[in-house]
Image (cartoon, rainbow, N blue to C red; front, side):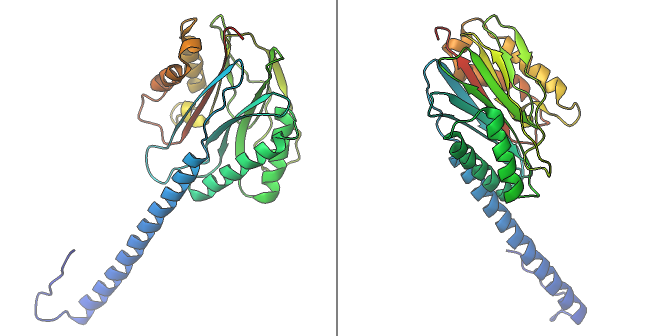
Length: 280
């Protein structure tokens, strides 16, 4: 508490007006700070509550990491999810709602719920993203999102994926070779444009690993996004033949460390590793 004492016995009128205005502004600042912290707490709680435990489907191992922004009310709409479809396929997804704070976190939760509902009816990654695009455009016409969805099936030696305005998946083969799956993506979800987002398919062998991620992992203001994707590809390719099969959780940490060793990061980070077991 701070006590202000007048130089004489009483404040003069001008000083009294100044003190009243100072008190008013201080009250507004304190109230804003409380609301700021309250909204941050709600957004962070909502975001973490939706990062559920990953499934353990046959022949596929999953490991995920989520790191909030390093400062401020920069909690965004970054999210990941993985779940089974009725036909035995496994949907894996990473997404990012534009903006930050409570509104972005709420929209992220609605997109996640909508995707799970749509996937019950089946549908490829491209079809699911198209439905999410229409959902977001009609629900929140001034809010946008990016996402990438990959689908695995235990009876198919292929990976099918689709992206909407999102950084491309990175795929490591069992021989250690890494490729960026940068086939033509769709536009951002929710933009005022009619679009049908297409699927892409690639053959995958046991021992392959797919990395899905948000731009907070690879993008830096001074360098852009491409150098970060190259660093991610190099980190994924640096593991020995059995490391990813034996310790996928440790491998996820091993990828994050070199990419986040700088102090420039100011956005949330999501990373989802999908590893086909060597004996699958």
